[in-house]
Image 1 (cartoon, rainbow, N blue to C red):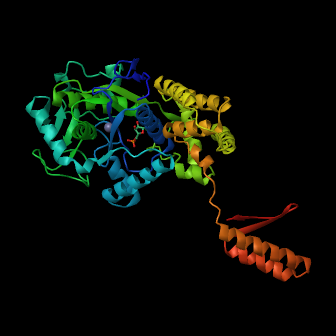
Image 2: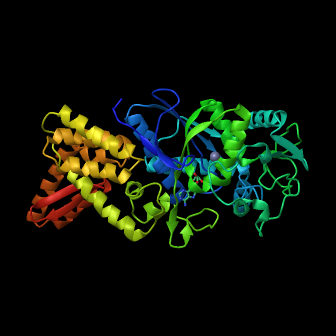
Image 3: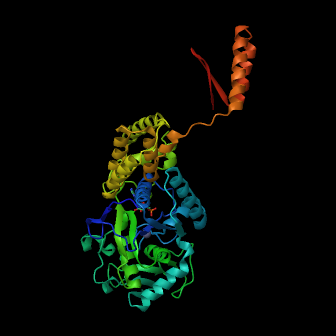
Length: 470
Ligand code: AMP
Ligand code: ZN
C-alpha cells in the first residue's frame, strides 16, 4: 500500500471527507451503468472516465476493489421518474427492432467505446433483465415490512414511512415532486407525491414489450430497484462508494437509498461520488435530445479517443465541463507534444527507487485530494522536468498511466523491424536506383508499383529513397 490518505467529496454529507472503507484494504464500489437504447454520448463517457480514474487510483494506492455495474435494459422511463415511455421501447420503435436486439447492440457499442477510452470493464456487469426474480424478492420484502403498497395494480414505495427521504439533495420539495410539474400527469394511485413505482403491472403503456410474471400480475420493474438489488446481490449489505452522474442524485439515487436501507434495515452506502455534466453551448449533452457526440464521431473527425480522455482529465470532475472543438484541439496539441517528449526518453540508466517512491507519493496525494486529475498530470510534467535517469522517468510514466490510462506507454514501444523485409526492400530500392541510372524508367516504376502492392510506400528525398509500411 502507498501510505497516503484519500479525501473525496461525499454528496451524502456535502463535504470533502477522508475515505475509510468498511473493511480494511477493500473497497466495494458500484456504478450506475448505461441505459442501452442508444449510443453512449461523450457526456455519459465523461462520467465513466472519471469513475475509472477513481477505481484505478484506489487500486494504485493498494486497495482491493470490487466494482459492479448494471446495464439498464428495462424500466428506465423517459422522465427518470414514473412517467413517460420506457426508453428501451422508444429505442426499439425508432429502429424497428426488438428491445433485446437494441439492448445487445448498444451494450456492445458501449463496451467498445469504453475499450477505446481505456475504461476498465467492472468486475461484474449485470443486465437488469437477468435479475427479475431478485427484484421481485426485494419488492416482496418491502411489502412485508410495510414500506410498499399496491395501488391500481402497481407496487409503490411509501416514502412517508421514512424518517428522511431527501438524504442526498437539498432541493425544495415542491420543485421535485413529479406530480406538481405542469407537464406531468399526476398518478392518483400514489399516497404521497414522492412515492415511486417498484413494479408496474398496469400503466398507460400496454405495449411494453418485456413483461414478466409476478405476484402482482404480469409487468416489469421500476428503474431504481435494479441498482439497489444488483449492488446488494454482488457487494452485500455494506457498500463503500456509489457513483453516477449528478443527474442521478434525484430521483434515482435518492430512491435507491430509500429502498435499500428499508430492505436491509441499516445504513447502506457511505460515500456518494457524482460526476458533473459535460455541456455544450446549448446545455447538458443528452441522448434524448437526439443531438449528441459519440467517440466514433470524434474518431471520424480525426481525434484519438485518448485526446478526449485527456480533455476530461484536464478539469475537475465536480465542475461542469463545456465541450468545444477548440478546447479539444488544444488538448490534441498538448497530447502530441507529450508523446513526442516521451519518445525521446532513452532506455539508459538504472531506475532510482527513492525517486520512484517520492513521485508515486506526490501522484497519489494529487489524486487523493478529491481526484484532482489535472494536479496529477502536473506531477507527471514535474517529474519529466526533473534531473533523473530516463529509465526512472519511463518507469514512473508507466506507473502513472496505470491510473491516467492515456496510452502513454505506446511512446516506448519500438516498431518491430522485420529484418528479412527490410533487406528485400533495400534490394529493390537499389535495383530501382540502378534502373533509373540506366534510364530504364519503366522498370523503376514497375518496382515502385510492385512494392506498393505489397504495402510498402517509397518516398524519394534528397538524402535518398525512404520507405515505410502503409
Ligand atoms: P444513462 O445511459 O442515461 O443512464 O446515463 C449513463 C450515465 O451518464 C449516468 O451516470 C448519467 O448520470 C451520466 N450522464 C448523463 N448525461 C451526462 C452528461 N451530459 N455529462 C456527464 N454524465 C452524464
Ligand atoms: Zn443506478
